[in-house]
Length: 397
Image (tube, rainbow, N blue to C red; front, side, top):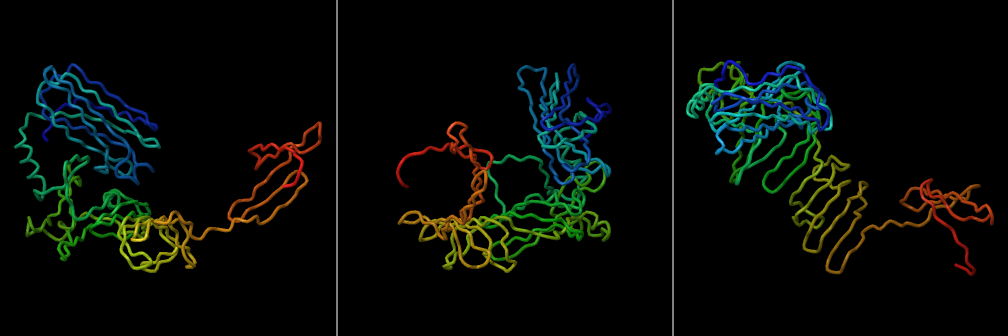
């Protein structure tokens, strides 16, 4: 995108946006036939941004045209950490395609939907010179090492197919992440969805995905498509630079690698899969928790919800291997497996009340309330919170 010499907006005054706070800009009396706008926002590195490739900050840009037959353009932008400008700041650049008629006004609203504050360092809005879409495509092809570039900040699709899905990859890259960061991500393959938590270690590797298609495994490595200029490290491709430029040096080729930190620890916190139950049948299952054993396939200390040929189950496999407890629903009704004996373990009388405990429950404390007239117990205060009144009647229990 070729830009004009003078931006429509330049705001270099730093501002801190608290949670749900907004920053607005209103531009009017414009003279522009720009077919594209580019919104650049720079924000500080913080605990909220360095551990999240997509901080919860969004921009809404509304463009009104002088031609009243044209409806307004409204763009929603999620601010990403597209480029690390320095050790203390990130930059996001977003390109907006217009209808190509005279612009009457532009209103920009930047909202912090995060629970923590975000510091905006600068906001700049550029307009393009008159360029046709074909010219833009030519520029992009000249700037990138491959034509099949992957780049999307927000995607809307009527249909989509993929062999394998993994989220939060950009939160693990050496350009965006930090050693020791904890990254939560989802991996979906075949009919299994797994939820992981990874703690990033010091070792690095080129990011790749291995897929199995019709019994054959294929490993695809990922590369940056641009490593110099304003679009550096923004575009990702699956094409090896050497396939485009056979004479490229090893060092130059390595500079294009999409590098990520390898996890020092990796925990599968939950999964939705088809798994074997205790009878050896493969059934639809939700698995909860990491469990208490590192042995492959161990069920100890995990929760399970599944349906098999006998009924529907919501159970917990005890960590000591002594069996399972939970709820079973089948043709005969609802059954409790491993019902805990809730007998009263003890009763202790104190000067001002009673303490007692049932098995499996916390201790309860009941403090006497004495009636000043009758000098009898008129109630109990339970755990210093709830008042229970007391009455007297003749007879036995």
